[in-house]
Image 1 (cartoon, rainbow, N blue to C red):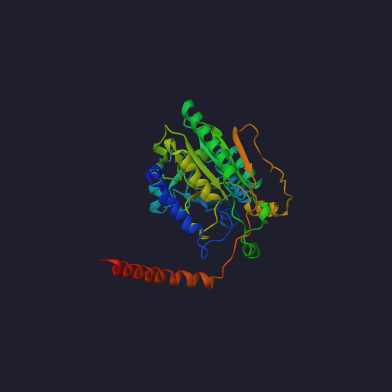
Image 2: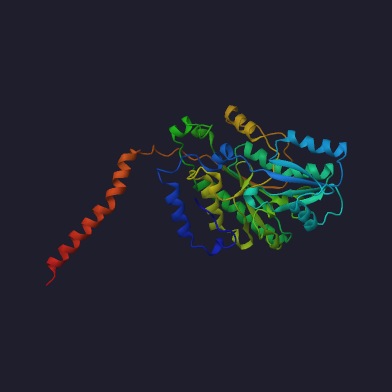
Length: 372
């Protein structure tokens, strides 16, 4: 499966990546016809973050009740309490020392095990912090847009430099608007629909991108910002550049485009991958990392399959959030793809080298006979 480089994306010869992508995406023996963004939404359950509650002595009834309330919010989060006064494991003691536990109880958010279990955020155990941990206006807006049919929401995390942020937003918006008019979704295979790989018919999917700008110093998004910056090891050191994060599926970030890396070619490469046929259905073999969101994704997918074509907006949209652009198009259905039986493809692939070799030998002998 395609594994995109992170910071050295700009130096990678673009044609080599596109060639590799084409070979993987169009291999009839490996790919399903469902676009990556849709397959991820229906089948790739978000990896679970871990909230460690470091405390001393018994938790108060209020704190215990607060932690219990999170279970009903459908977040990809598991909660674990650690009493630092009860001979905790060495790992927990080292963690408490690392982050400098000045007050207890304290919340420590760790990434999923599939992503090194690194600390993404920490703060005191308060209702405000716990609520901010699970959800935020921007994450609610992302869920609403995905529920309304967006292929991906491109989150632009501003750096604070007005000129850089404006230039990055303008470039991202214009390129996504262009791509919405020239790219096309793959035609769904009827067999994939019958096999349950997608719950919507061919005319139920739309190529649709939108952008969402977040200020780096937005207090309401402080946890979400920390989670985004933790999706790759070096992002926290790149403070002076705007960053674009394509978010798709059940809150999965493909990767970050940073500063000069936000350009036409990299935007097109990411967009093409997201709307292309899912060449590998194994989540772990695809690029990206899940973020923490409190969304009932199963209910969202079910509501999409039962809803009329014009889906209503989900509750919880924050109209105060700055929405840069929404581009949408529904690609015309391509002509029916001509299918070839697998055995015929196997024969062609097996004998192609032999036929080529014979032709080369015949051409060589012909030239020898002509030679003086």
